[in-house]
Structure formats: structure tokens, C-alpha cells
Amino acid sequence: MGSADSTRTAAAYKSSALQEQPRITDLIPQAGWLIFLLFVSGAAAISGLLLAYDRLEPAAQPRFAIFDLTHSGSLAHWLAACLLALVAAVAGICHCLRRHKLTDYHGRYRIWRWTAGLALLASVAATTQWHAVAGQELARAAAWNLPHQNLLGWLVPTVLVLTTIAIRLAVEMRASRIATLSLYLALACYAVVVGSLLWPPTALAKAHAVMATSGSLLAGHLLLLLSFTWYARYIILEMQGLAGCPKSKRSPRRAAHHHGRHITTHNHYAHPSPPPPKRQSDVDPQPATRRNQQLVEEAEHEAERLERQEHRAQRKKRDRRRHQMEPEEPTPVSAPHKKLTKAERKRLRKLKAQQREAA
Image (cartoon, rainbow, N blue to C red):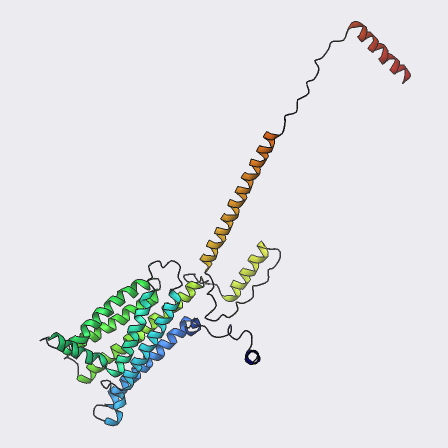
């Protein structure tokens, strides 16, 4: 009964259903222009929220409270929570990809696990403000008598942890220039937020100061998402052996013509193009990089060379042993040249004369 049910269930799906499922790498855009398009869309959303706060004046009109940048339930805080949740998701993808790197002997990929967890906590704090409550309790337990002690209660630990994580991430992402630059810009935005919290800008109006602080915070989240997404794309290209490859400056038509002429000049017969790679699921092994394939081929060639060398040495050894076991044959000694006597020479001349007469 159970086998019949399992057969019926298996028949309801194709045999390649698991192989055709999307992988986690499909969640990262491979085209650079698409990542920048998403960044521009996020920047437009942030600009729209700032413009709505400036024009609608939600603090004076309660019906527009959803656009109030200082309210924990406003659209700005929910946008920050969504951006940080996406940052946590992309950091998790980077962790899943980076842990397969063969040259990471010290396990530096674990920084992405910590980054994903902290980004998730920050996403929750954007709407619940639990960090402010934790800062008050910490300041009360430490019995601080400092100005802004409730603010310093959560700001100081946050800055210390963020600085440590940022240094590790900067070292991790130094191979990708765009990702590193975006990370530095995000840290600059966060520095502006910290400075505005500790030293409020008195030269600006209150509404403009709130817009500067909230805009810098949202811009930092967006730049951090751009940095992580671009680095995840770099990891995928590195796994495929395409990271750092210079692009050709020829047009597609000229490049195709040059490629065809190169094949005609060097090869008399055209080779069929390889079939496209099949889709793999997350349970399938990741394809080996080009460098790994070269190392495997070199190891195989070296093993074959050593095997041939050992076989040749054993054959020489057997031949030498067989030659030592065989008895030596006596070499024939040619008889010394004997000088003919006078009678023998006379008889030889007579025999030659008879042969000439007979001929």
C-alpha cells in the first residue's frame, strides 16, 4: 500500500524537478546594471519619504503621521527594517558561498554569520526601539552620571561592535572595489548619524536636522545592501572563474569575426560548442573553479609521469637480472690467415685457367 502511494506521488512530478529548482545564487542579480537599478529605486524611495516629511508636515497634521520620520511606526522606520532584513539575507548568502573557498584556512567566512545576525537584530530595533530600552537599563545598572546617559547606553556598544565588524568586512571585501567603496560610504553615513545624535546641529531647523539624520541612516542601510549584494555577485563570479577577467573592447560582430578567423587559421575542423550547463539544486555540489580543475589535471599528469617512470625502472631491472642469469656464449675465433705454398698457387692458377676455357 505504501509503495503504491509513493509511486503515485513520484509520478506526479518530473524526474528533474529537484534539479530545476532555483538556487540561492539565483537570488543575486548577475548583471551589474540591475543592481544599480535597484539601488536607484531605493534612493528614490528614500527621497520620496524625505520630501513627504518636508511638504506634508506630519508633526502638525496627525493624519500624515505615517510620514513622520521620528515615529517608530512610520514608513521610514519600516523601510529601514526591510533594508536591514535584506542586508541580513544577503549576508547569509555570502556566508553560504564563502564557506566553500579552499584557501580560507582560518575560517574568515564566519564574519558573515555574525553580520547577518546583527543586521537582523538591527532590523527588529528599527520598528520596536528595543535598543533604547536596553540602553536605559544598562545606564541604570552602571549608575552613570553623564549627559545623554540613556543614549550612550546603547550607542557606545553599538559603535564598538560596528567598528569591529566593519574592519573585518573591509579586509574581507578588499578584492571588490565597488563593494569596498560602498561599505566606506555606508560607514560615513553612519558616522554622520552618530555625530548628529551626540552633537545636534543647531544651525539647521529642527525639521531639516531630522531629515538629515534619518536620510543619512536610510542611505547607510541602502549602501550597505549595495555593498553586500555586489560582493555576493563577486563571489559567484569568482566561483565560476570569471572574477577579474578583462572584457573585450571589440564589438560583438568584430569579436565573432575574429574568433571565427582564429579557429579557421589554427584548426582545420570546427569543434561543436559544449552544451549549456544543467541547472542544479542546492543539494548538488557546486562546480569546481577553473583553477581547481587545473590543479587536478596537473596532479593527474604528475601521477601518470611517476607511474611511467617507475614502470620503466622496473623493466630495466628485470632486463638486467635476465642478462645476468643467461650463460655467455663463446665467441667464435676466426682462423688465422694461412699463406699459400708455391704448389698450391700453381694449382690455383691452373684451376682458374680451366674455368676460363670452359666459359
